[in-house]
Image 1 (cartoon, rainbow, N blue to C red):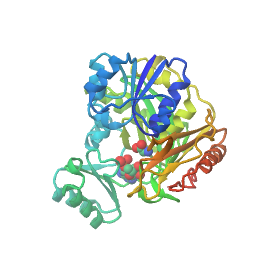
Image 2 (tube, helix red, strand yellow):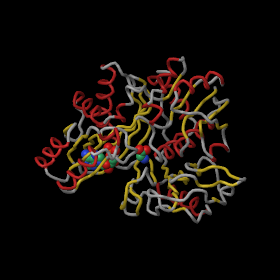
Image 3 (cartoon, rainbow, N blue to C red):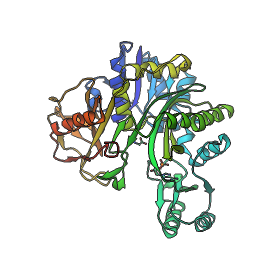
Image 4 (cartoon, rainbow, N blue to C red):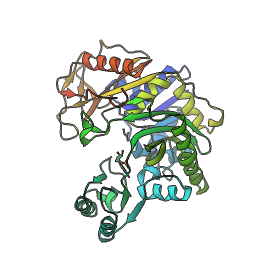
Length: 420
Ligand code: AMP
Ligand code: GLY
């Protein structure tokens, strides 16, 4: 089987690694890839948001399955173009990808499906939004409706802060994404992520994780794309998982199908859990990054079988084999991230690190230059390890971190603190 993976982050390195564990994979191409991916697969320069170009490349290379990593190509309709060309695709249509691309759309689907989530108001003008905030009081959550690269959510501690955020969003600081605003009740509890494969009909849970979004230890400081993650999430016990499936995932997926936009791909379900009751925070229409890294290390070769079954609408016959194990990933980022950072510093000693089914350093923002690996992004490496306990996974992950020679990088030393 010939496989094409779209993307260039740690998530796509992990997807590529898991795909190569499976003997079914004859040829793997990743577009555009990164320096770590280039060590295990062929990388191709391709505009991954251009559906026609991806479809043409796929037919030229006799691709049997396209796995779409990030949200941008999904929102741009790349899956639709590939399906029109008769290709098997792991990733939802642009219509279904609105579950991530539009917060008001998701709230409307949740209402129709009676899925537990924060109460909300949806506004297209600042004065009405501010009146709503004054009536509700703080804390309150102000969200730009569209895709804002994870930066469109303001948790306002005071009414004045909420009003300032509303002015900001309608004032254009989030571009098109801020032309509409959703204002939500502030939910308390513990957050976890739940990953479910959906093929339009069947919903198959494949794992849980928790990530650390803040840059600083003790979960402080500005938000990032994620500084580390672990799987499974202890708070997602059988009862919470079942409720999340029965009350949130299945009803919303049925609503999507009933509206003529069945969901196909991985659904990333962001939950807030309080007193054993999950409520939806958000849907994403792709794997989380870095959550994917811990999921792939735990799933290994079966990940490809599952993604293929999902793409071919055969999830009712698929099964996940669970090992009773734990995984952790620690993100190494460039000094300064999530603010401005330097590019081009050399990363050394990567070759001497173990690479097996228990230890993997997945690359994110790396490139090869003059025979060296150099940092070219904010989040640069993911030291990822598996063990029979979370403590063992943690110790292995930090041993990988300590083996990397990269003075211009940093990481959090407390990934997993809540669970440990
Ligand atoms: P989102 O982009 O919707 O995932 O929001 C980013 C983060 O903001 C979430 O992971 C939560 O930590 C937080 N958040 C979003 N909505 C709420 C809410 N209604 N109540 C409390 N926290 C929230
Ligand atoms: N780690 C959060 C995300 O991928 O959205």
